[in-house]
Length: 475
Ligand code: NAD
Image (cartoon, rainbow, N blue to C red; front, side, top):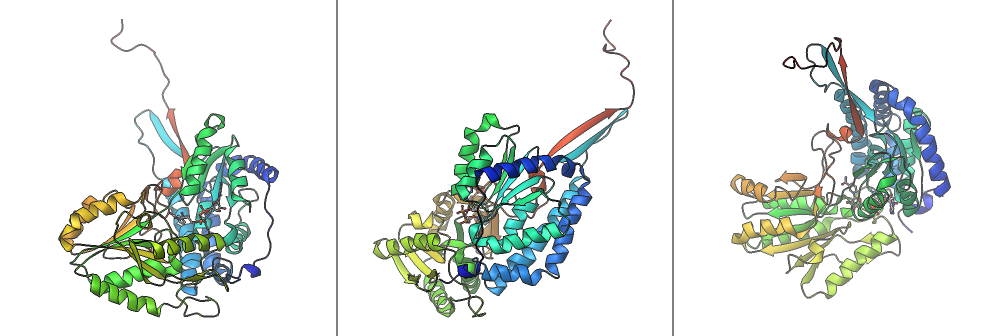
């Protein structure tokens, strides 16, 4: 069916034995790579960024559209060009700058921090939804050695990125590209004594991997670093909000890339006084959204959802919504997989603000709305805070005095917090990204991210002989 899956060439999966061979090759390559000056390692990423922003831009972008990811040209440009290039450049810059952070010296001795890679290999397990995230998960820890398991449904663009890194001077076995069945890969890497980190996105599978690591903890040479992330992101609207901003921000956040961004708005809280206006404008906007083939129809706003599994999951939410007395589908609600995994942009209102549809990650073009009495907004802010296990992104639309109150109540409800702006669209180096609670909040795109993937060694060197062992007051 649609999604151009038929155009993606068949690929082979690495089995358990091959994954263990790859681990051995990684570990063998590690020492020399780790000893290279950071500038040399960074040079690979700087060069790859130049190549992707120049001669290979079209290729990576096109593969993000026609590979199964199915992004529109605008979404592919944001991802496969802009964000990926920025990740490579800023991660390299931050890694080089890290060397400048040194401890103080005192008379007679000097202190030096050496930013070593992790002792072992990093397993980078990437999601389907961002070509840039695949590149970032694999190449950020490039002071390390990495086994990169791409998503089955982002294979084409991920492989192009891997090839570019190799062509830009990445030596063999530093990053190994290993398509594999998820659980086979997870079982193999977590059963190796050399596992030093898992760089993941997503939270359900991540919990499973964390438990596997905990189970095998006594086996590892070093405590593995674990990074993972998921979200059920909110837009909170106060009666002082600008309705046009609310509607435009929400339509983009909830429906761009079919709601398949981890930061997509999927629950919204609107005061009753504004609801008629917000509702009407949302419905008008949704009517104009074209869902279609991103290659044949450059005006399509989004295309099919990623695969049959995702389609079935979203369909179940829509079917439940149609039969639930608490929920009302006010826009969309239909899906059709005859030509591809198409789901209409859908808006559902709920009478119950704690309904699962307000708490669970759906990862599709489905926006749920709770309409509240205008003056109850403080209670509703607390409700926003406690409704979902996630705390990734969130937005408040309101005037300043309410923003202050909301920021305090929602202090722990989002790792990326937006004021009068949509919950999506974080830019590398401008809004380092990550949530708390059901995410590990590692902030890729920021200066501290590279530190997560290093294991600093501090060296004290004394320049005067140690002449005595007694304290001066001792007889
Ligand atoms: P997913 O959890 O289904 O799959 C992610 C990866 O895990 C895939 O490569 C898959 O093959 C692999 N996998 C599955 N089972 C495994 C196992 N047992 N061991 C090891 N690997 C296994 O996620 P997805 O549908 O590809 O992506 C969506 C998820 O990613 C959402 O939860 C979303 O919030 C999250 N995400 C988060 C961020 C972020 O916070 N930065 C960015 C993008 C996506």
